[in-house]
Image (cartoon, rainbow, N blue to C red; front, side):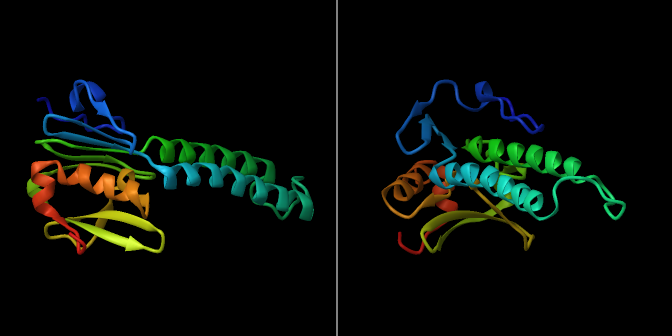
Length: 181
């Protein structure tokens, strides 16, 4: 299997030939597990534009979007830039994914994309937050952890299904640290 591309985009053809998509946002084929964004990402993708529009409306209601001599950058420019950034972040939230294959872990999160060989990963920690289940990737020799954004789910059956999908991968199962399992 060819290595995953190093740019910001995934190459679905090299990640999985023909995935069997499941209702929990995970796909699996012969040793390859693919996770897609779930309800927490969908909620974030809806909240981000609403928050940006609220900020712009608040600024407009306070002092309008007209430029004054004290403004280093015109407020209209800031408003447009804010909307562009929010649209990009909402799109990235909706298109989060993770591919676990024999070569390693390939993840596209909200703000970062990374490709790690299994030898570089110390463990995968299951972290429970109020109402959320998160999988954190701990790398050998590094204090910083990455989150597996596509595996983030609201607590419940779908979160358990995502964990089962991760456990289905033979290497990830050995690295997974889940206090409830």
